[in-house]
Image (cartoon, rainbow, N blue to C red; front, top):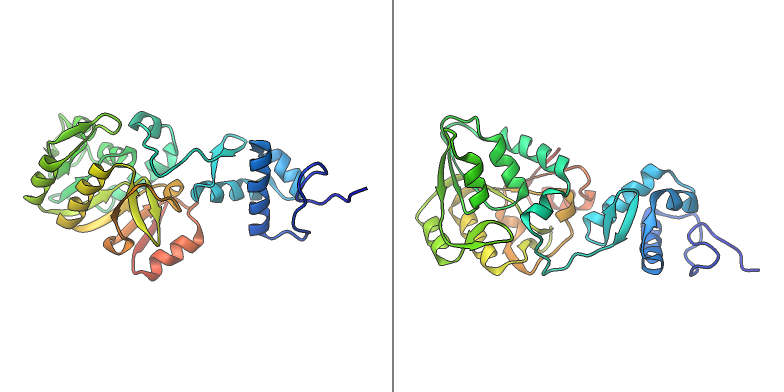
Length: 272
């Protein structure tokens, strides 16, 4: 009879012998996901003889690196790719609480009388909502929905103009870029689809990336605002290298190795 082990049931492929290290366990989880099509926290906890808290942390880390798609109670194979470009409404359903905490932290860095840039995205939309009570603020944006969020408030809004992208409600193209080049801002809050600490900030749309690059050029300070699921991912088009950033605001599920890399590069990191 073939002996069992803590990494796989008897009808699954053989794996590394115990004791199981964190990285070994996560590799084994990925292997199980490949063979089974899904994994559950409760089953993994029993199989690896470890707590559900530990398994959830494993899945969050794998999700943050784009290796799995986290679901309630478990995980599915990752559906993400460099060309994936979900709609704004689809994005709003993901990591909602993390985005609200990031927005609250971002707003604390804003002062009356400043000029801000908000690019398109759900996290920057949350920031816009949190800025509605400011009395002396100018916001430059290429996001039609963000302009609508601030309509009727004391905040002055400059909309770039350009060609409308239906997925993101953002304005892109030469008109948007030319408008931005004629302006200057104190602070840019930049949301991204992918954040590889060695490659840089990226987005699946080439035209969006070009507009974002101009935003970085005209802002005195650039702050990336993104939840931990964006880390370890690369989308099609590079916006800017990590060296273009002054600060990152994200949640606490970001891999520690990424946080160390950012800090070593002289980038401030705020965890919420």
